[in-house]
Every structure is written in structure tokens, then in C-alpha cells.
Amino acid sequence: MGYTRASDSFKARAGVVGGSTSDRFKNALAEKLHSAATSMEQKAAQSGSHSYGWQAAELLDRSADYVRALDVNQIKDDIQDEVRGNPGRSLAIAAASGLLIGVFLGRR
Image 1 (cartoon, rainbow, N blue to C red):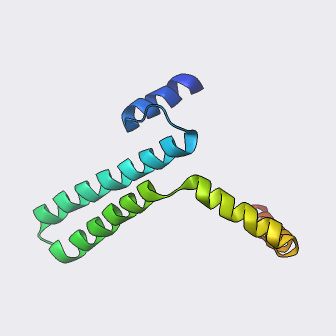
Image 2 (cartoon, one colour; image 1 turned 30 degrees about the horizontal axis):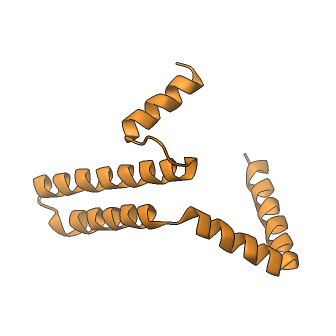
């Protein structure tokens, strides 16, 4: 299966058509979280471990709602404003992040 067909297959399974790439990804992730919550609720009901199972399912369902409500463009604008307002600090954070990633990848 080629890249394009795999990508189309993922979109079809996620039920996402149209919109921006970030919106499609956001909706697909929210659907997966909701699906996991539903599955966890069913397993909790079957096993009798209601307390922890229901709490975990509720957390996953709230996470799905949070992801759906995210405004990706607003987040991008906030990050751009922060970088423009504090270029030195942003550069230091980027350098430290790069160093940490290099250390972690170097240990493999």
C-alpha cells in the first residue's frame, strides 16, 4: 500500500473529510480518544472495577473534548507573539531543546 493510499485509508477510517490538515489531525485524535474512553467504560462495566475504569474513561473523554476545542491558529499566533517579544529567551529554549534531543538520541 503506497503512502497516498495509506493516508486516504486513515482519513476514511477517521471519518474526516475536508478542512485543514491540523483540523483533520485534531478531529482524528479526538475520535481515537473518545473510542478509547468508550472501550474502557465497557471493560470497566464487564469487570466490575467501576471506580478506576470509569475515572480513566472520563479523563479520556474530557481529553477528547479538549482536543476538539483547541484553536490551532490561536496557539500558533501566541507562540509567534512570544518568540517575537522575547527572541533571546526563545533562542535559549530552542538551543536547550536541541541539546537535550541530541543527548537522548546519542545514547541510543
